[in-house]
Amino acid sequence: MDSPSLVADAATRILKDLADPQAINKAGDGWKKPAWAALEEAGLTLAWVPEGLGGGGAELADGFAALRAAGRFATALPFAETLLAGWLLARAGIASPKGAMTCGPVRESDTLTLGANGSLSGALRSIPFARDAQRLAVLARRERGGSAVVLVETSQARLTEGRSLGGDPLDALSFSRVQPVAVKDAPEGLDDRALLLMGAAVRSMQMAGALEAILELAVGYANERVAFERPIAKFQAVQHNLARLAGEVAAAVAAAGSAADAIASSSPPPCGEGQGVGGAPTADVRSAPPPHPSPTRGEGGLFDEAVFLEVASAKIRVGEAATEGAGIAHQVLGAIGFTQEHILHRFTRRLWAWRDDFGSESSWAVKLGNLVAAKGADGLWPMLAAR
Image: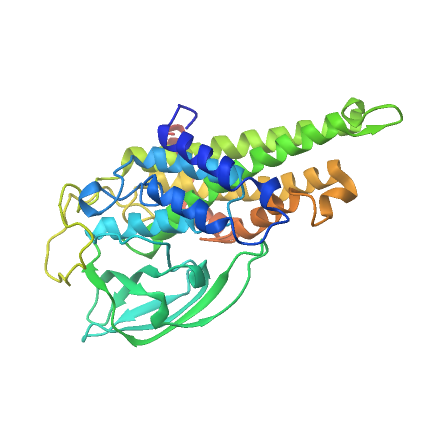
């Protein structure tokens, strides 16, 4: 994940020019439209969508690199959500429309049902940026059995506004016999667990980027802040804290990068790749066979056991690093780091919020523990050694 990426470079340039945390901290929301327009024009928001389905056709690794860059800017835009929604739609061959999107379910207990007449019903909690998104891409369960990928207008839902710890929209959506824009059967293996795995990898990469940013902030402040006639970075206690923070950041970057690499190397191509369907609405196709051979099924359905191990471990370790790293950064900066005027809160509050999206570290720890227990004493070491 450390190799140069033109996609990540483009995202960094745009966000540095239009979404720099220091520049926008005291500003209103006026920066959001220009920043989003620039990201969309560059093809970054639909980077994971094949060109034939209206996207940029970038590799999964490039998209993850762009997410890490976005994390470094604590971007308060539905960039990750639109990327993930485009990925979900592309798996089923549904063309991605322009504009902001979000996706779901984000919580394991949430479900949507697709009736025999094609209408969508159910409720979703805690959908990021729902009020800012024009459309929602979701996995729904058919009444007759099986799953479907659904594209629906968010305006058709009853929306209850909420806020995440980071101050970003985190809304509840309720659907009652709503007619979707497009519906297609989910390919084999694409289920709620697979979406949860992909979302966890996305959040892990964002958190890794944000942790890199707070390390830079903490080191910069320690070198500039003078106490007793010398920079506080010269004090052993501060040096110790910065070393601990650097260790947490290194672990988070390594874990998130390993999970992203595992997904990028194991994922089959989207079923719509190479199909020139443009941006037209996609019809309901209920009987089409799976577009690609099914990979070895692990805990994640679409993804094999190795991917599950990497992503679960990443979400746990990066979540722990977010907790520990944010605390250390606030210790180093002291009182100023808690003020609204300083930008540290833009990162730490989002780190705290992202920990719980697509499964908290405790929920993933339970899943990982179940896998280890199922392997038994003789299966643990071969599973670990294979990585």
